[in-house]
Length: 362
Image (tube, rainbow, N blue to C red; front, side, top):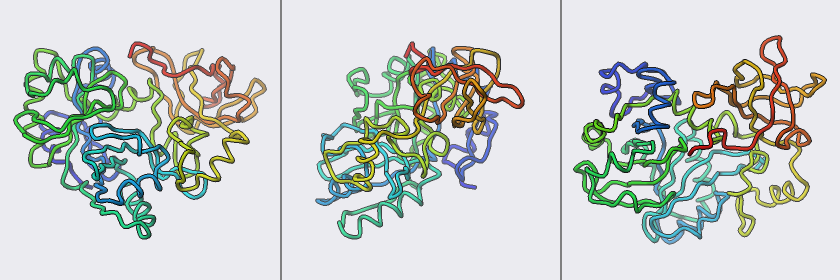
């Protein structure tokens, strides 16, 4: 089990630690509902240093990224980031990721912790014929997510960068918490605004301490992975391994908006055909109309209790006090306002297909 550079700090703060993606990670400090509300209404800080980082550099960097990712990275200028995915050869997804253009010929790819080795092998396979420079810097870098509506106000005192000027999915390389060169990125996985901070492992303790100090008057708290999951689910953000995986296509998952057929990429021909014919199943969002909590793997049923799909993510929404979830159903049941049922143990619980996000005040 790997540790992040802040593991001992989390333990000293009384965090409940659990194994996650091969890392010893804080799942909660005070409890998921308290931490969730802290991020929705104020500001919280997450240690997400388990995430992977690859540098792709040189004159062939863009060619490689265009080949392996579904989105059009040629649209990126320096200082911009892009959500994308790595399609596999069999209509599935190797991983979802964020692509940052750091310099003209330097790109940072941020991938999921559980997929670091798999992603590296997949990209390397296509790089054999292209020849971009690749470096896996995952072991050397830390990542903190400072999230919530008070994030800008709380953090402005520890940087000379105008945080309010950084637009969504843009970033600046600048000073932060006394460190000269960190990436300050207006991205996140919560839907409540804020930043993600990339720095070296040797620097992250100083950054963590100064972030908590600067946020004291704003009620900042450390937040665990359990609240990260409820926050992302209220927004309908996909979680790899649940809502997308090696067997789900980006089109089935509602990720057509990051699948650009204006270029040639891995499996683009087959995906273009799927788009033309229409996927046979789709990822839907639903909310329960009765008491209950949907969980991954629960069957989704039609009005006659016939199986039409499965839940991929589910929880009791702390913001809405309702059971919410995502799941795949046959396309005919994917329209918003369609009534469906979720089988929770022996009970068939009424639910409705809804439009995302669940949480609307973001």
